[in-house]
Image 1 (spheres, one colour):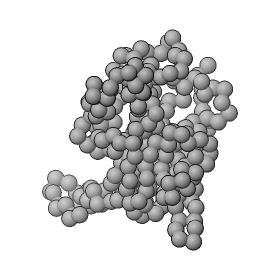
Image 2 (cartoon, rainbow, N blue to C red):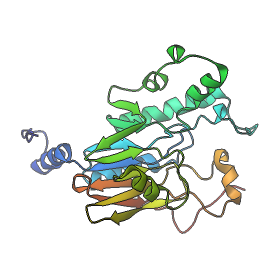
Image 3 (tube, rainbow, N blue to C red):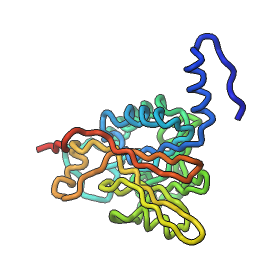
Image 4 (cartoon, rainbow, N blue to C red):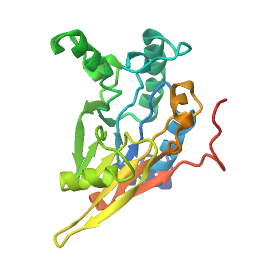
Length: 253
């Protein structure tokens, strides 16, 4: 990519920063946000982290929205109804659009709830909107089941389980793989053979653990691990960055 020309209204240092960012192949990965129930500081924290690593490509690992009112599980009576939740989620997504104009989104199991409910109701796909239309997304936001960049596979991780979920997914895919889905785990494992070395990265999540939408987790010994992922060196190096939440979680009573 050709280096952009210097513009007098910016300092040279600012121009170099912007130029390096645009030429960077580093990938920043946003964890499950479950809007409108995302941690209130998570979006800004992701922006600061991605800027620090000079990220040039951004992946949202999926479950960008929660769709709690559309779930197949029992619903808490104090939670918003489907229309109210969707309106809140739309406003939250618009903040993400403003912060990150270009994002590749992996379809998560919560993302797909409108389509799953439509299948249950026998509604053909021809009558359904796309994800981009549902969330009034700008042109830079695109949804797919999975994305591949520099031979690294990015997928939500539906069907994976446990602390080795990302590792097992990478082994099954026979290539480096990044997942979310498993809120309780964040980290990376490398596996080497005589032919290559691959990694499995779980990027954790960005949820508001105090929200009643996640009250089911109060009894679980494993708590959500908030953070994001970075993939560097054209797909060769992966890092999990934990979000600083202080000395401990504070759960609602």
